[in-house]
Image (cartoon, rainbow, N blue to C red; front, side, top):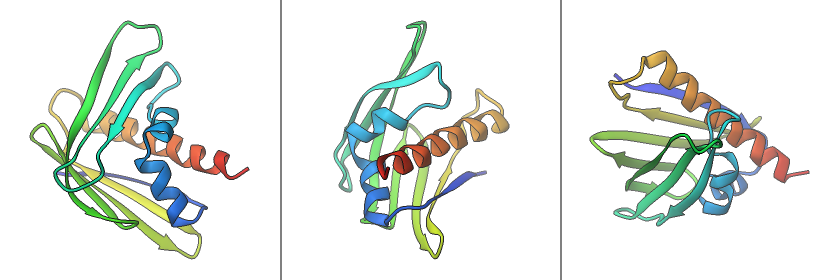
Length: 136
């Protein structure tokens, strides 16, 4: 089973790609709710390169490292990565209305599928808002 979330970003694909792959941007958009944030991010954007994002509750009560290894990079088009024993794929598709960003990922077994889908969708929605705010 794979879970898929997506958003449409009204911006040039180069801007969308940069915001998705740049640590300074990632720490601004990578949170599923207002009471969480990403305190640090690192990206080695190449096949075999590692990435990591430190996600924490703003009250300091909990946190975790979301990390993995890139398995496929097609600049401005696709990113695939493994995290633990799971896999994800991010597609960037130019449309007449903007760039459709679609993330498909293997779910984990602790939380319900609906919860995971909602959380990843919230992060992607934050991403779209961040890119649009940068355009102002």
